[in-house]
Image (cartoon, rainbow, N blue to C red; front, side):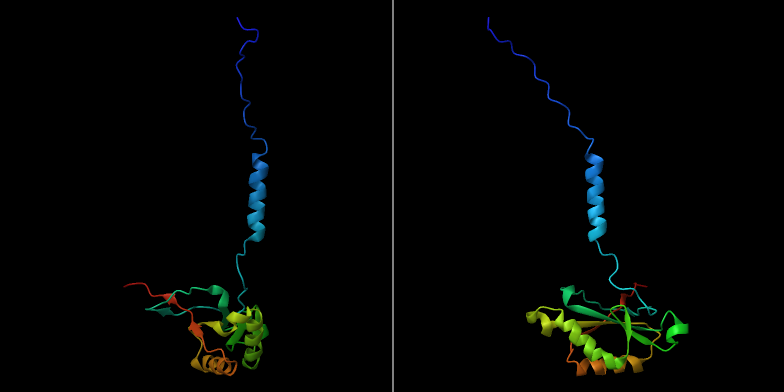
Length: 153
């Protein structure tokens, strides 16, 4: 007989006491790092429908302009206004805004800046034409008009 006996080894159970802590740390991390909304809309937005749409590839090169009636009509009036980066601006400020947006991009991407105009369907063509003229003056030639898909009838 052998001098040493083979004892049965029992592996201890995995402790799950720290599992809730890990889950809550992950939840907290994702809550802090997730961006839900980039801008607060100060103008009304009812986007028109289109029959042909094209999806954008590189959304980092896109800057958004919103045109519509202000939500706070007592403060801003009832005429259509232009919103850029959570601020209402005038048409004369568009060139400066485009230059600021270009400066935030990398040097190689500055010529590829795209302006996405989200225009309320109740806005007349006059303010849209004024914005287009100012974008041409700012040498922002790539302009998109946002719309929603038209549902098949």
